[in-house]
Amino acid sequence: MINAQWKLVDEVRSTIKKSRTVPSGFFISLTRRLEQVLSNPSAEQLGQLRDGLHGVLNDAVAMAPPPVVQAVGESTLDDPIAASYILGQLSFAHQLVHSIREKASSKVLHELINNAKFKPYILALTTGNLSGKDLADLCGRAPETVSRNLAELREHGITDFRREGTSLVNFLTPVGRILSECLPKEPKIKVGANLSEAKEKIKMKTANEFIGMPMLSKKA
Image (cartoon, one colour):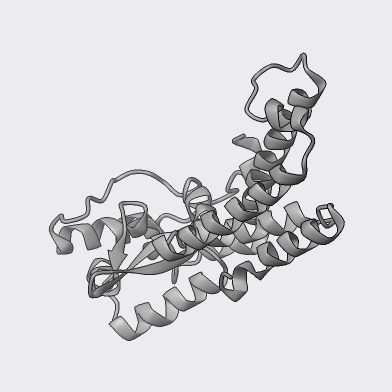
């Protein structure tokens, strides 16, 4: 049994055993949960996901006809069964990427990352994972302000955090990384650089307002 977030996987295993079918909408729901776990890739969550999906796969393999099992992993599109497997893999990968990209195309999120209140955090986190203290130093803001602002960014799925030893480090989610591509890349800020110098560079960047920011679809 895995945690509540992945209860879906347990329910699917039960359905497969009872009716030998995969519930309608399962892969769309799985895509959304994968997006969540990829935004915060803790070893515990990834382990739970691996074990849960491994169980679903084993159950399905045990019930599938032998020719189908033999076709899994084949690379030819000439065989109808192998072709169905390959197309299924490609379709799921496309659904996952589409889900992340669709969220990143949100007008609200574009406006958010260009807001002077949030832009310095996005720019700083493009250099790597940073603690709240690092962000406070780099952006010239009080730790309490940084904490509130990061909470808003997490609510929109742009940043997240995880524990590394005794510290909490912040990072851009897949959606946040896509959105950050719309921000200017120069001058670059190096993690570990003189904080006062880095802070001035961030201020220089955020002082330049964007006009007519290109839509992500035009970059594809």
